[in-house]
Structures are given as C-alpha cells and as structure tokens.
Length: 521
Image 1 (tube, rainbow, N blue to C red):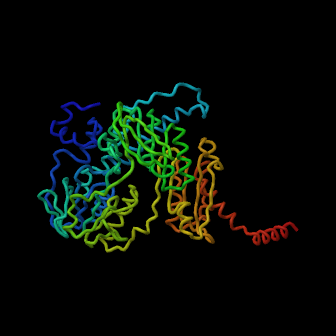
Image 2: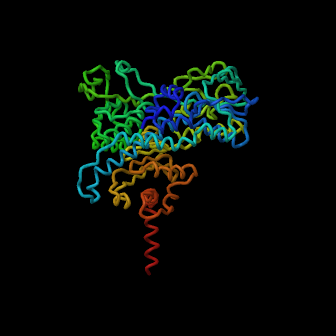
C-alpha cells in the first residue's frame, strides 16, 4: 500500500525517494526510515572528548556503540544513511524473509510426498511476499533505531564522517574529538568489469529487495552464497533463472561434495547453471539484456529480463580522509593488525570494512574485541575467533574451521568422520535425508579442526560444533552429549560415536575379547 500525502510529508518523501532500499515507500518502509534515519533528526552538540567515536552504524558499529555506552563510556555514533547497515536493510533480514516464503512455496509444491492430496500449487502472490518482508524488517528495526541508541546514552550524528586529524572526526560543522575511534563503515556491492553490463543496468543485493514484480527471467552472475540463495528463491517464485559462475561448480569456496548437493537441489528447482563461465559480456536485446558466454567450451547466448550481480564487494573507505589520521588501506579495506588496530593506534576497525569474513556475526564478534582492546587495553586477537557460516539454500550448507580441500592442501595429520543424514531418524521422518556431516579432527586426538554440514537446518547444527571447538571439547564430548529423540542434533552424537570406533585398534579389541571371555566363566 502506498502512502498518502497525509502519511508522509512532501519533504520526507523527497528525502527518502533517493534511497533505493526504501522503495516502494509504503507504510512499512516509512516506519523503517523513521526508526533508522528519522526525518528532522537534529544532531547533538559534541560533548567534549569522547572515549569512543564510531564511524558507521551497521552491525559492528552498533555493537561497539551499545557495548561501550553500557560500560559508561562517552560515545558518539556517525552514520550517513540508515542505521542497521546491510544486515537489517539489504542483507540478512530481507533475504531470510524471502527464503522463508520460498520454502513455503516448495512445501506446497511437494505436499504429495507427505500424504497431501494432489491439488494445484498455490499461486505466488509476489506483492504479498515482498510486503511481508518489509513488514518484518520494519518490526525488527527498533533494535537499531536512532532513538534507542540515544536512550542508551550514545550521541547519534547523521552525516558523512571524515577524519580531520589523528584524533578528530568531522561531521558537517561538528568536530568530534576522541581518545579512541573505530571504523565500521562496512562494504558495498561492486560489480566486476563485465563488458556491456553498465549499459543495460542490473540489480545487486542492495536493490533486489525493492522489486515489485517477479522477473519473468532472471540472470544471476555469481554462484556464491547470495547468488545461490536468490537463484533458488526466485526460481521457486516462478522466474526462469540462469545462474552463471566463472569457477567450476557453485559455492566454489566450500566443500566440493557439499556444494555438489546444493547444486543438484538448485537444478531440481529449475535453475539453469552455467559453470566455468568465461568471456562473459552483456548485450542489449529486444526484450531485455542478453548474456553471452562460453561454458565448458560451448558458446551460449541467453536473453533475460533482469540481471542480478551477486559477486564483488568493495570496502566503504571513500570520503573518510584516512590520510588525515595516518590510517592505511588497500583493496581489502582498512589495514589492521591482529588486535584490529590501524596504523594510528588510537583508531581501530571492525566488520566488512577490514575483514575477509563478510558476516553479521563476524562483525559482532570483532566489535566486542574492539571495545575490550580499545577501552580497556585488552590484547584479544581476531585470529582466535572461531567463526561459522551458513548458506541458506535448501538444503543449507554450513561450515566452521577448515573444509576437506583445505585439509588436503595443508598436509596436516587430520582425519575425517562422516555421517549421512539418511542415518538420522528425524531426517528420515522429515523426508530430509539429503546431506551429511563431516568433522575433521587431529589424528591421534579428538580435537576438532573443522566441520561441514549440508542438510536441512545445517545452520542450527553447526553451532554445536562451534561451541565444542571454542570450549576445547572434542569428538568424545559429542559422543557423550545427550539430545532429545528424535532430533537432527543426534547426528553430532553419531559423529562422536564414529570417532570412538576408530579407537578400537586390533590390540585393544584382543584385550576386550579376553576380558569378556573371562567374565563368561
């Protein structure tokens, strides 16, 4: 539903019209904007020297600001667009809302497998799907709202922040002096240099959530997590989806066997996949852009209605005047050491602007390190973090630590336990037997060094392994852990049991046999 002139003042409508992530400007997006960049917000007067000035109001910045203020620090937070950053506005929150709707579509389509009488598949109401996403996003927005942070004691400044000296940041006419500062400006979508792409226009993860109609055909460039998730979503919504990846297979950085299961699932949903895509160029067509490429020595020319570029990220360092503060940066973003310090020891960085882990939870963890190190002379290292991640396709693919390929390349003495989901009763009952769990451990011990899970709810399952790794617990602990029956979590106990069986050497078995024979006397 669009807003009437009584619901949004003309100056507010004009201000928000330039923000693609807030289109269409309905009541939900207006509620979002009023929370994370309120119209008429008046920046406060700077309050002397701040313990911490935070540049950027995404996950890393908000966690830094809230944690520091909660400990009694004087904190200023600077954001030029929308508080909440990618995660709330154009990332985790909207994408997972669409994924949930797409899973409902698939469940209705596959109902006969569960004993439902065959009926026509319900029609996808894309307008309702997108409104639901916007409603839920606006519902979550108060957690990141400017007013909430003001109530926490944070001075919230909207505007473009820039360094004006080693210990000073400017926002408009205001000058914020600091003892410590953190750069948490994140990263943005950046398309690779594909000939002809700019001439036809394209969507990114920052603009796809503003669609109001399902594209008849959608070309997705890049089969990483975003590309695979959105390819499956829009295929389930009814688009004819073509997915192009320059590497061999989807999710090229993941375990190849696990990625192969995801690829097969995408193809079952109707996604046309062109791997090893080379010489890609985009041409104008009569009904939309044409994608021309070579895949496996064959030439293809594909006409699509819209293009989604799901590869490429660039750190947001422009306009920060980092030179003024003696801060180094490069193609990977702001340069930091293992304690997240920049060359200017009064300035730290956290999140996508400096990390190879472009995840919300990684940004959160890094922000906590910054608060401890910057304000309390901590010595915590980012290299000590154990960071899991998950691609939310159906099935999901989750990873923590090293994967199978990295184990082989490292040459370390590492062994692997593999358990099929088909061996887990709950997976059988849910008709979700596709997938497996692999846990890699140091040979000669039970210490876990990595794991891959490809299965329904893999993102939930991987957390148990992450906790074990963080606590220094191994496969023996997983074996002794008790899970409610029947749940998918039993797969972790089965993995631990598998490790126990490896300990039964021929010599130990002979000892057991002798002992048991003696008992029978």
